[in-house]
Figure: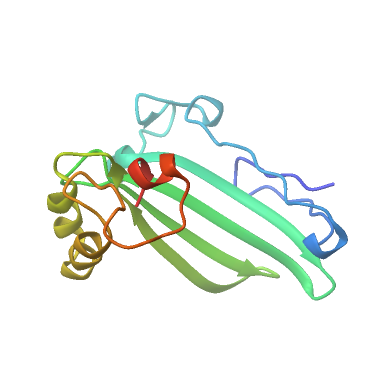
Length: 154
């Protein structure tokens, strides 16, 4: 059975690959179960750069090739608190094999285009291409359910 540990220094157990019908287990790592209160560690005096950390997760699974781990964190954006930045480190048998990162813009929002522009010109261009000024994805047929057109992350 798969387990997700709250501390990266602990040994992880893994589980069978998804191709055998098993799904990786997930556990939300909260500040409370990590001994952290108000963004600061209880004993060690915590890092100030971690004050923007919202959530962390670690997912482990095993295939016939070896053990995979995905370590994810979600952070507040420094300019707009509503924006969430996500970064995932992919590890195979203890060796880093890649990183994925992205940004989630909340919808609806009266400052949707402004938030997209603060991330990058390319994201602002995509947001204008797909969405109206409040973030509703109505400009191009998307095949989304009605509620998903008007709300959720972009």
